[in-house]
Image 1 (cartoon, rainbow, N blue to C red):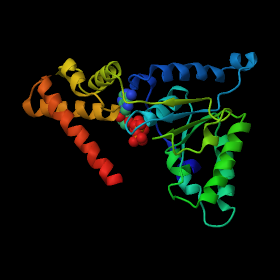
Image 2: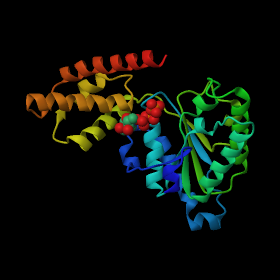
Image 3: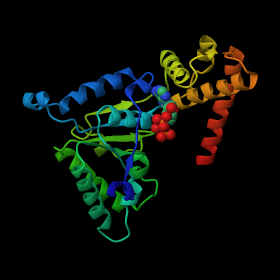
Image 4: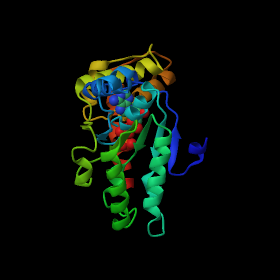
Length: 264
Ligand code: ATP
């Protein structure tokens, strides 16, 4: 309850599971392996608890989806940390707020602490003055290297080049995963997954769809399925031929270009 009202830490509901994630098999296998560390046998074995994972990739490649799937499949609460809100006016206030927030997360352990857009928070794009953000980062880094609690950190970022190098050093994250745009096989599973979830009876020409969706993110593939559903509903049919995917494949990157222009 107190978490739900908090500004800095937000409790996120999730009903996502690894089955909702198409592709990304290496990441899913790795997470399955790390999950084992939370068992009593693993503790007796002396297996250290995992510290966290950094997920880097373009928009819509499933980073948020994976964070939610981890929390749900590990049966742990998902706490989203809004780093921007750690930055307070008075000297020293940001560091104090950071330490207090970390303590509150530790009090909720075992849990998943999710830092979204960590590159924006610490990539020096002006959300705070450089000195404060350096000190907040230092607090987080110290916590990460000394951490023994069962708070699993999931950080997500769109790019790696702006990230402070100290965040990428060994001893911080257990692993860094680059989520690329999905391959043909991955696009196949993502399209099928969203079709199955939304309208299993709908037949689309998957081969044509795969030919025409190269460079699509998972989010854009989901949107293509929705477009196909709109078409099928309007036409009162359950069969959508390849030409429709051609239409939607032109439409989706257009909307991406518009988004990029808005953000720049
Ligand atoms: P951003 O950088 O903009 O935050 P993101 O990488 O966090 O993007 P998500 O928010 O996870 O992307 O993706 C949006 C939606 O796209 C998901 O909720 C899901 O429906 C769909 N999606 C993205 N990737 C996948 C995937 N690999 N499998 C299935 N669905 C996907």
